[in-house]
Every structure is written in C-alpha cells, then in structure tokens.
Image (cartoon, rainbow, N blue to C red; front, side, top):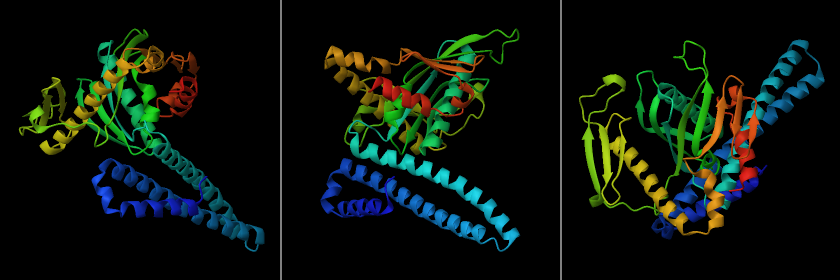
Amino acid sequence: MTDIKSIKEEYDNLLTQLSNPELISNWEKFETISKKKETLEKAMAKQEELKGLENKIKENELIIAAGDDPELTSLAESEIVQLKEKRKVLEKELSVLSEVKSASSGQENDFSAVIIEIRAGTGGEEAALFAVDLFKLYTRYAKYQGWKAKILDSRVTEMGGFKEVIFELKDGNVYSKMKYEAGVHRVQRIPKTEKSGRVHTSTATVAVLPKPKITEIKIKPEELKIDFYCASGPGGQYVQKRHTAVRITHLPTSLIVTSQTERNQAQNKENALSILEAKLLEMKRDKEEMKIARERKTQIGWAKRAEKIRTYNFPQNRVTDHRIKKSWQNLDEIIEGKLNSIISTLKKSLRV
C-alpha cells in the first residue's frame, strides 16, 4: 500500500501544477489533475484515520498486557475487536482509492464516469421488474466501489418496474469495470405474477456509455431543439402542472433524449445533455471501429449490446457468464452488488 509520505509528495506536486495559470487554458488536463487531487485527499484522510486506529489498538494492547484491572482489560479486549473490524473496512477503502489512482494515471482509455441504460426486453412486466433488479445491483456495486450514482431519466410501469432507466456512475475507475456489463442479461425465475409456479425467462439490455471529457464532444446550441413538458409517473400518478420535463433533439443526427427525474427544468436539461453527449460519443466510437482491422473487431465483439452475455438462474442460485462459459453459485450475493468476483474474472479472461 502506498505510504502517506509518497501520497503527500504527489499531492503537493499536483497543487503546484494547479497553481500554474497556463493550466486554465487546458480544461481537459485541469479536470484530470483536479480529480486526481480529490482522490489523493480522500486517501490521505483515510491514512490519517488508519494511523489513529493503530494507535488506539496499541494503547489497548498495553492495557491488556499490564493486566492491572480485570474490568479495564475486558473493555480493552472488546474495543480491540471493534477497532480491528474498522481497520479492515478502512484498508479496503484505501485499496479502492489506490486502484482509482492507478487507473487515472495509467489508463488512457479509462473514463471516470459512465452512463448506463437498462431497458426491459422480452418478458413483459417481469422483464421490467428484472430491469429494477439490475439497477439495484449496479448501484449497490457502485456504493461498494465508492462511486456516486445519479438517475438521469426513467420510465416506470404500473407494478413499479422499469421500462427504461438511465443513470450515471462516476468518481472512480468506472468504465474499466462497468464495460463488461454491456449486452443482454437473461433471468430465469418464477415471476410474482405467476400463480402456477412455472419458471419464466425474461431479458433486459444494458448499454454502457462512457461520459465524454469536456473537449471530446462539442455541441452547438443551434444544433438543438429543446421542448419542455409535464413530467408524469406510472398510470398518470405524480403528474406535475409545471413543465419541468425536458426533451432534446439533436438535429444533425435526429437523436432524441429526455429527462424528467428532477423538479426543475435546468437540472433536467443538464441530465438530458449528459445523455446526449454520451450517445454522440458512442456514435463517434462506432464509426471509428468500422475503420479498424477485422482482428480488433473480434476482440471488441463481446461488448455489443445485442449479445446475450449472462443468465441469472434464481431457482438454482446460479449466475452464468456465457462469454467465458463460467458459473458462480452465489446469485443471492451477486444480486446484492457483490460483482467483484465476476468482473475480475472477466478482466483476466477477456483482456480488453
């Protein structure tokens, strides 16, 4: 693990770079350095907290070794157990921050923010409920990773499922992990609406769109047609009289995006623009891929959203990833956001 002295030295170096007036003209570099500085600040705070815990553990160990007061010794033993558990949590958080720091300095193609689209596929209401499960899975995983999650847009069914949900994950080495989730996800289970106890198969599609850096996508105001309308929930519930929902049409490409999750136009407009920028970057990347060699196309084929990549079999508590033909027998844990075992295996096997 990186020691606090080297982290502080790197942090001071970043402060020196940020104080350079010429850096302001290079927004992309400024943004990269600022995010790295924020990560180092978090790491230093965790290191200081860990140092404090170590000192408390040593103090309690001295009390136990002295053995002068049985009651005090008992309290010290109890506190040591709690402190060591807290130390494990801090060490894990530091490990994640270290991974984020390494990704930001060594991976040119990584993105610290992505936009995820989950859409219900075949299976009617059950597919929409499965889309909710996938959304919860990814937001729980994001929480474990220390990422931030924010819903940009959604369409809800009568039973509370998602016809579609679009959300952002950011503040970490997000794309390098979430890129493995793009494709068709299949679920096999007994739906809540099934009275005979028969297992149904439904699907949902997941698209993982890197969020562009400031200089990557330029949108001119005259290229946009912006409409405002009343936001609404399932079955006409929560209808607002104010026109807060936003629909943006990108005239050169005819792309249409919407957002209605916030209570004000400005925030919904910002959300919709984020979705649009990510979609335009995806189109740009797709065009570039058309020009590259056949061998490279084969390598990136796993990421296409039309491919069936994974099956979640609830009756057998099993998850199978079809790209590497491997299964895990802990679906109950994976659905709670514990995706690390799958993603680490995919990173080693696919090497992309």
